[in-house]
Image 1 (cartoon, rainbow, N blue to C red):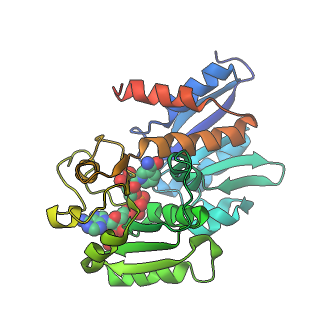
Image 2: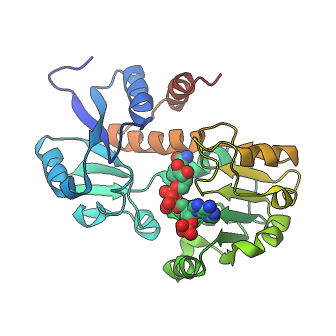
Length: 287
Ligand code: NAP
């Protein structure tokens, strides 16, 4: 119930109408009986500074950021966590007496379904497809797991070189190596963990995959194939991996767990992840 003392949370994006975050956050808030409400905050890029000042004036507790604000917000914050600085993006912000503080919970979200497997990752070779924003959280996650090697495979030599350069001297990335797409078959033949961070295969292109049939044939049985995409489920990439005998993980758990990590910061208490999961599964028509 919204009362006179209800505090605001939200997700700021442009566009933001597609966001699933209000559904999962409000389900958890209702379950806890917490006096908060989580709303969409549509903000065009030019309006970001005004919106941030407005949220401060309104006493907003905190908010998430999605495209295109994850980088642009950073100079407006009083404090940015080391992790968010290394990734170069903030997705979770909360108010403190010093001003807005920001971090990135995508790494925690990415890691949650992997940590649930209870493995020792130290001899793992990870292959990351794509070198965009989400790949940065995945690389930090693989570093945190202690993977032996993380190959980042991309189609642009310039962007790959920039990617490698941007992690120079950072212990967060572990043993990071970049490879051109032409060397993907060799990387896959070694891979224990393959993560798709490209948008290839996302609705409305469910028949597309980052891997053609010859590349998919390189996936090792018992490898873990992880697609950050969550619609459709499973993606073509995950279907190819399962046909090879690999374990498939889609991106919904990452979405849920990055959200839960943010809600825990705002509410300063443990949050019911199962309730958030159930709300999204019901919304997406998953059983
Ligand atoms: P991004 O910054 O635009 O990066 C996309 C990457 O994919 C780029 O490296 C791009 O290569 C590469 N790519 C695109 N088309 C390609 C193609 N045809 N062949 C080879 N590479 C291609 O996007 P992002 O923010 O990282 O998001 C990527 C995906 O992750 C999206 O599907 C997003 O929905 C998903 N995601 C999911 C979660 C979650 O919680 N589950 C969180 C974040 C993101 P170039 O750099 O060469 O253009």
